[in-house]
Length: 263
Image (tube, rainbow, N blue to C red; front, side):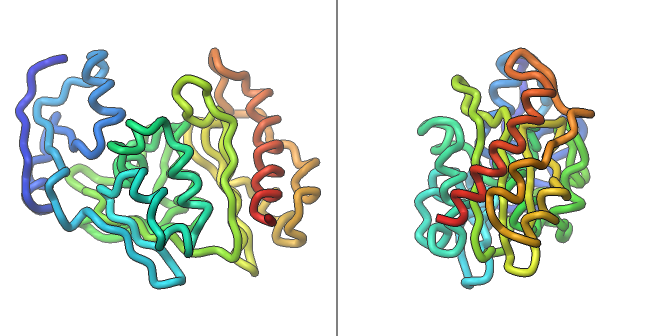
């Protein structure tokens, strides 16, 4: 690990002012610290968001759930507000990593990092979330740009994320047995008049599955997606799974997610 300067600002404006050049923001540190240990990242400065109180908290108005960027995965999983308004979101948070990761990893950090196998990006897309930052707001469909790439500008910090409460929803993933990242994960959300289906782990970035959305909007049942095949073009191939297998898993996980949403 290379040497760096450590900062612990007490407010958003102070934190944003420190993010210059090769400086990096530190949320839960579950990705950044590991990259630094492997010398895959060598920031000049680390700006720790952990003491900024305005980034904490979870609240619900019944129609949506707003989660502070520094809310830990374990907090989301245990939140009575989340469990009542969007139980699928709480269940998803409970699936992330292991107990240690859930105790440290954060909602905002996961979304800003946009790891191709992360769970939160699927929830953001499927639940039509709004990402609020110190500079404004971002729509879910315009936020994720590609591999580890988002619409965030330099110095822009996620402050909270507001998830829309669906009529019913569920998330299913085929886990990497070691990391518990999604080899393929599918989040299905039924809003009554429309359905959103988000896929993570399969490609370089999270994406929506339009064919499945259309079929489920017509009839929300497992059979509607059982024969829809995901195209292999552009999907990931690595030591864990081929593009062909990931395409197959998209259909399998989507069907299981619909089954779970109907229970």
